[in-house]
Image 1 (cartoon, rainbow, N blue to C red):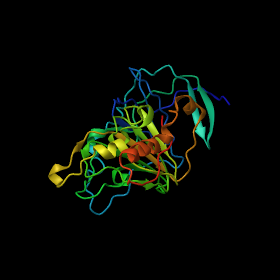
Image 2 (cartoon, one colour):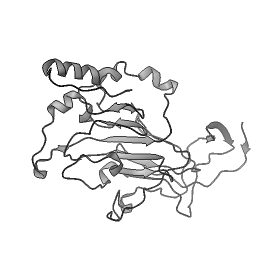
Image 3 (cartoon, one colour):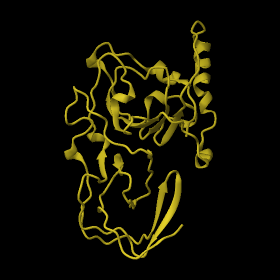
Image 4 (cartoon, helix red, strand yellow):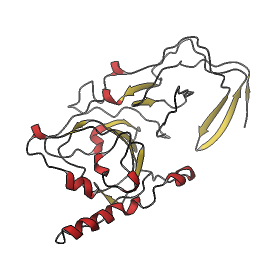
Length: 281
C-alpha cells in the first residue's frame, strides 16, 4: 500500500553512534540509519516495546547506566537525507508510506519519547565473589511484562564459567568480542561476530576446552579479568530461524559440545556426563 503525503513531518533529529553502542529506538519513532562505514547491526524488536528494567532496592541511580552518559538527538533544521519511502511494520506485516518530501527534518521535540545511544563501556552492574551471576543480573532493557530481556556481558571480574543449565526461555547470544565460554566450538563459534541460539529445554554450557583451561580463583583478589563483550536476547516466545539465517549457519556446531566431551572422556575414561549446545552462526 502506498499513500501520498503532501508535506514533510517533524521528527526528532540526528545523533551519532559508534561501534559498541546500544541504540534504543522507541516504537512509533521514524528512524533512518546512515553509517559512514560498513556497519554490522544486531538488534531485537519487541512487539510490546522495551524499557529500562525495574530498579531493585539495592541499585543506585547509575545502574544499569547513568542518564548523563546517554547520547541523545540534537534537534535542528538539518539537510534531510533524500529518503521518501518509509517502511512500517504493524502486527507482523510490512507496508510502505511514500512522502512527497523527505520526512527527516526537525526543529525540536517535546516529551520523554526519544531515541538514544549508550556505549557498552558505560554500563554498570554489581559483581559477586562466590557464584557465576545469572545473565539477568546484567539486564539493560526489558519488555513491560518482562517477556523479553536484553542483557550485556561486558568486561568484568569473573568468579567462574557459566554453569551447565537448561533454559526456560529461548536465548540468543551475540559475541561482539571473543567469548571465552565458547572456546573450542566448531567453525569459530565464539569469535567476534558469531552468534548462538539456545532453545528452551536444551541443556548447554561452556565448551570442554574452556572448562579445561579454566583455573578456579582461590580468592576474590585472584578473579581473572575477562574482556568479553556479548549481547544476550532472551524471550518467552520461541525464536525461529528466518531464511536469511540458513546460508550462514555453521554446520556441526550443535554437535561440538558432545564431540569435545567424547574427546575429553577418551583422556579421562572415569568421567561421565551429557550433551548440550545448539545452533551457531
